[in-house]
Length: 219
Image (tube, rainbow, N blue to C red; front, side, top):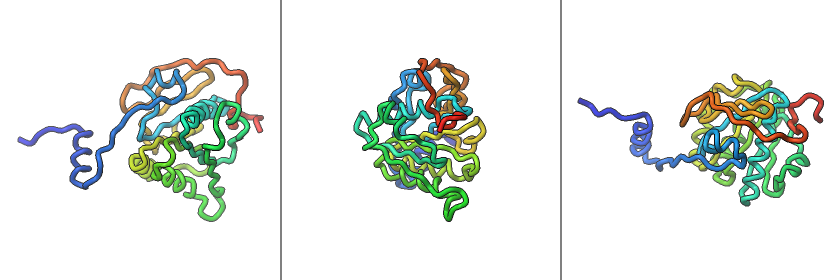
């Protein structure tokens, strides 16, 4: 009778046969105590999604993570597909802009614009130079179905984390992230966690003013 193996063991065996290195997975501190207490931190390597409506605070939370990385003297890349990132707001939260690379791919109608952002994220993750790569979802250009697989493979190669900001629960569904959190004003809810269970909730500390560029009326 054949032996029974788990999916994780099967992947490890296939990787060994292919000659690839074993991927060591971990959850690393995010810079947000509430998030770390909820899901143990950011998956590294892996894909992490924050979804929520305009003004939910997802961008502020992402910038807190970026600030934590740059305080540790690590480089971070932000793929600003909607061209809404406001560097002074990032600076106010504590981001070291000298350690933050901002990439603005061509717009959807421009030459190469359709997949330029997807390609840029893949290359940044794969490089190994950026432990954290943030990408904002462009609602006019939904991810093609292979983006999640390509980003996951690139993250494993570079031992990095892709932090994906989407406006709603379904926008990044095809990406199949390791962790997906719903962000609401003052609250985080786990809607997907490969290493845990969905449904857990954590409260976020109050903030003075919103800086989320997706919030109506914010320049």
